[in-house]
Length: 492
Image (cartoon, rainbow, N blue to C red; front, side, top):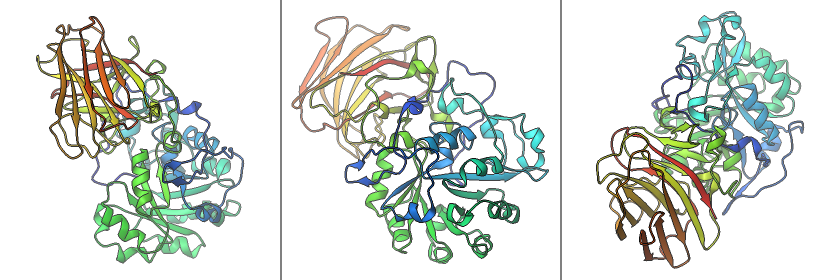
């Protein structure tokens, strides 16, 4: 449910190429589905499993709660039975479901009214029969990684049969023309008003019809509506706000005294900011990661061909195109998009040890950039907000860079500024195209040491104690699309 003004990205075309994505070992995490964030983030509890029954009253009685946005679309192909089922298996009490109708009146689960973004075929669902629709699969490999299997678009009645009696489902008519048919199907579910919530854009008119059938309503406010929430909030039982809204806008919605659910929550920093502002619910796209506060691993999962839960590009608001690719031959991440980019390794964060070693290898596989262009690692950030070299960030920290001419440098930078302060520099050999370069960052409470393997004197050291946060990112720091690769990322 992105804001209407946010780009959706290009569709996947053809078979995966070297520029492919990786999804993380989300499937291996056994996490709680309804943790309550505290000042230090959510604390893990035992998952309730896929068969435990949960109701709307139970969900909203909690101090805070999670809803799987699109079935947690950062982890599984969105709005598929796989995504809904895996979210339920993780213990999620609530799942968001988007609905469209085919030409022959079959209600199906899909966010967009066309298939372009998720299948690569520019076809309107309303113009296809259900049989014709079955020829098209949700292909999220550009977002999740080349090992993610395309999934069929499910019928809503099949989803209801599996989940409507045990989970809370936020159900939205995306085409805006199926209210009666959708409500009729909702009415046929056992104890439907205890499990199903009518969800729609806050200015939609179907709320009254849903309420007349006994359903509670949740309306989300995008940019167009945030300037005039008073006109619509009274019509709703619950309200929703996008993570890009300002603090003042979120506080105004919270001030109506109704439970507020923030969407789409991809990171722990998004969750924590909204919680501080009074948001109670988190419609989360990345539940295996956001619902925990400890690292899932101490090494990257690039070899799996699936993006690790918590590993994300610097923005999630620009669609699938900003996700780095994956090179299965070298088991490496490929950063090859236009301009300065970063990739937070949330699956390995936060690093909690007072002293640790962060290791990684990088290379320019085809040709090196201009002599002073560079790539490297940012570290010491207090949370998983984006940190991009040369671009002001909300979070401070360090970054070490390797220039194509061989200069190895260490910088420190405060929040909100573009320019960093150089702490140390050493000249090493010029980097050759195709050459893997091993970097090692050693952090202690008082000192930082960075080494390039290959010679004993290729080392920089600085005594600096300003930033000791546990989050880090891989960084491409130049214009153009010239690819740089990373692999063998470890924390010891």
